[in-house]
Amino acid sequence: MSFSRESFFYKNNELCTSVGGKVKTLSSLADLTERPVYLYNSETLKKRISAYKKAFSGFKNHIHFATKANANLEVLKVVKAEGLGADVVSIGEFNQALKAGFLPNEIIFSGVGKSRAEIKEALEKKVFQINCESLSEIKRVGEVSLELGKSTALGIRINPDIPVDTHPYIATGFRENKFGISLDQLPQVSKLILESAGALKLQGVSCHIGSQIMDVNPLVKALESVLRVNSELKLLGHKVEYLDLGGGLGVDYQSDDESKDLKNIATFGERITPLLKDFKGTVLFEPGRSLIARAGVLLTKVEYIKTNGFKDFVVVNTGMHHLLRPSLYSAYHKIVPLKIRDAAVKTYDVVGPICESSDVLGYDRNLVTPEEGDWLAILDAGAYGMSMASAYNLHAFPKEVLV
Image (cartoon, rainbow, N blue to C red):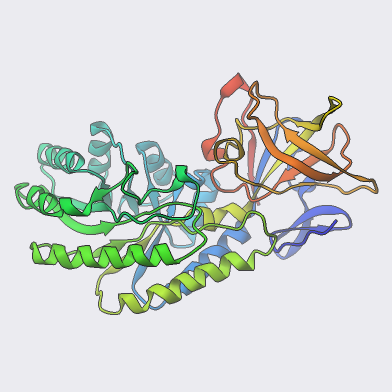
């Protein structure tokens, strides 16, 4: 079987990973009995963090992990130990970050629909920055700040109207999307803040145009838009200390060449560094997928091999309730066996137990003929896997293991 990666690879026909410089089989790292298992490799995560730090070394920056990509407590502890902050989109994620050891002043609170109760709790706990996405939200944060007798550090998320080549469900910086404040509303933003009786201080401009972006050009355009907004806000009487470029860099799920992802991170850094030469503040980033996707696999047991005379199916004990991306986005994840046997290769649809025809993890997959009781690995599942899992049909959630 042709398959070789840095993070997960075959040795003696068993899928392995590197742990502390030693090769370990995945079957030895997790309890493979009945429940599916999300397995994460911290070394892969650390390598990606190092790549970002190197790419952004030419300017003052701080990286905040997008907690929505993977909110596992042990993963967050690794991220914290590597010196990153956290980007959260709910008070639940905020408190999970605190539980992992992040300080409130290391957390950015993003998200388009924060409730009054969430805003109040975040302010009481002294969150570093709230990124507001509408005029109404700015008003609400101002009202809560006055009630608490606080002056709140505010970021405004702009919508730069930049289309990106990604799935429409994860494009977030185009004018038809619900996210961010339109550029023609900047005078109103300024007026709300200046007339807030000291309750609000504009300290940041934020922009996040989407997820799973493989071409850095739209991200560079987004930075240019943020810099123009910064100049306009200066003329309106505001001093912006932070430019928040969000996240968005993707991974090539179809390729085993992980170096492509690392090169894209480096290219992004090279492209934006010259544009930031005159900015004296700090640039914030919120990567998620590009840090953790490659570090995770979802291990699943083959329950049945089924044929209906038209197609052959591998029925496994995980599905859209544990890994929603294939059903929601038609996303591709490579699926491979934990152990390779000497057998013919056949084509199967890999499907789950959920009572929906959309519960398909992979169509037309060529697999070394599996048998009932075998275990498979669904690769690149570290991001938006367990964090999007549901209790639909009341199946048990997968276990999670960090190595």
